Length: 248
Image (tube, rainbow, N blue to C red; front, top):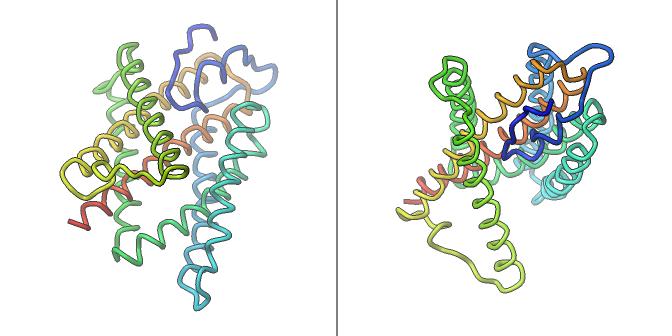
């Protein structure tokens, strides 16, 4: 497994697959696809719950569930990253928690911009299929240079978001240029969406490499979990981009 390359998705990196040798059943591509589908169903199920609560007569009924999903999902994601062999149990829990968060967040955007949620869902899955097609046909290759570029861009975005959170949370300082609906704000969001989409290529490559190297069966769940991390990030960034465009 020493030839596995890195990915900017912390769930699908070299450490996750390094040294993972199958003693029983091995990881398969079809198994990973099936488990990704199951995780998507988990997300949709709980997202529908908080979406419904957001449209109930009780003000703020969905907020506790949404916040629980945000923080709970983050904690479970960290556990899964450090304990990949727990993925058959933690990956579905992660998907259920993230669904609670996504349902509430989507409903908040929907109240302000009717129809935006379904547009974001459509664009997310459209991007997934386009990137998968581009990867399988060889139009986009996960070369060393490509990987390093995507990793650097993703790291820069993560650092910027972290600095923005610290400035906003402790000093009440905002960065209006990248958060606004002007050309700079929309351009920045478009750049982040592109980087998130390119991360899908790295995820596909890492999963395929795990299959080729005979990773253990539980890594199907881990691969599906890593792909879900990227898809959720992509969806949120598309939602944010559409929101900025609607404000113009």
